[in-house]
Amino acid sequence: MDDLITWINSNSSLGILLAIGALSMLESLAFVGILVPGIALLATLSWFAGQQALPLPFMLLSGFIGAVIGDWLSYLLGRYASHWISTLAIIKRHPNWLTEGQTFFSRYGGRSIFLGRFIGPIRAVTPFVAGSCAMPPRRFLAFNLLSAACWAPVSLLPAYWLGQQAEELQMSWNIWLQLVALLMFVAVLFQAAHHQLEPGNWLYRYLHPLAEHPHRQLRTQLFATCMLTVLLACIGVRSFSALPAWEQDTFQRMQNLPEHFFPAITLSTLPGDGLFLALGSLSTVLLLWLCRQRSTALGFVSTVAATMAINTLLKLLFDWPRPALGQHLYESASFPSGHAAGAAALLAGWAVLMAHRYEARTKRRIYLGAFALIAPVALSRVLLGVHWPLDVIAGSAVGLFFATLLRWQMDREVVDSPIPTAFRYWLGAEIVVLFLGYAWWRLPAAIIFYTS
Image (cartoon, rainbow, N blue to C red):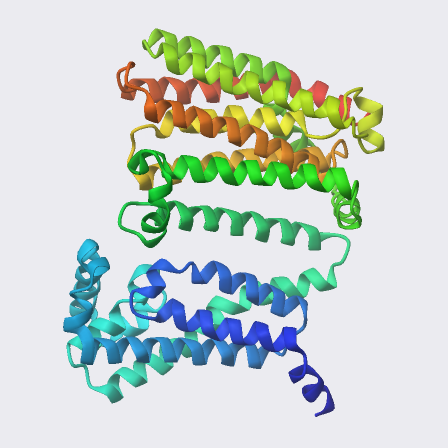
């Protein structure tokens, strides 16, 4: 009992529980759950709850209560305010929200309350539709309680368990779980922000007066600003805090790498090699030139060249020493990472070419695919022991910033004709052949180099 009282008095623990309950409610609330990336935030909070050893029953109860309240409020809104809500501007701009919910409810009836709880966009609509269709309150409440009781463990337990494991496995898998959680959070955050910047969504309406051509360049300007902010933050830490304790601790924990992972980590670092950057840039420029995309070709090669020039300038300005192994293998400075910068510029530049003129949903998939390739290159530099964590973050920010400028140029371009569809197939084939050929040639020598 004393332990329970001590726990309740802990502000951080109580705050996490309240946040889980509030997010569970918002995730289920009519139409709000479509706009809020609740699942990603709930997973993060559950992970923290597991790491801090919060009582599991209290966490599940918090999620359960929040989910029940969210669905019940949605039901009441549908029952008593459906006519008014259907006249709101945001609902008129997205008529498919109600249409999909009505179709789902008419197909499954009361079961849609239970099934919809586990389907993202439907979760925040079916209770509202059930209320507007005058579903009996007692019947709705039964489905509401049952679905929330099943949803809370399914949604919260995996991240909670990972948090517990991260606490128990201090020096081995803990750092890997944290890195995976961080990368997933960044990917989900990008997905949500990119979606909200589509015309009609609230973030677009808030930010579009700041853009010169909001319908084309708002995402570009915002992402470039974010990357520049990340770079300046890294420079600020290096200037005033040198090598923080948390960075040293993270670096040390990432060195406990099982030996059988070493070839894969070495393979991951190859897209940042200078020779690979040169081959990839030149072959892409040649392909663009043959497709009569001459200004885009100049923009692409300028993206990679400017990235490496700024990266080299920052290295000379800071002259920051590498870790011990890095000093043994390289003569250049550590901050920022040239491999991370070059790979980010090249891979993101390819993604920009691939995604140009596609609809927003397809662009997001292409960009997230590029992120899945850029992140391993950056991580590999720390795992190999040749860079500090902030080095790769700053390097990636430099490359992504200039790749964003390439997209800005292409969005403004009116001279060249649109990139032909065939170009994307040729570019995809070029990327695959180039990487496989380069890996076959360079991987054995790279393994020897990093183990010397």
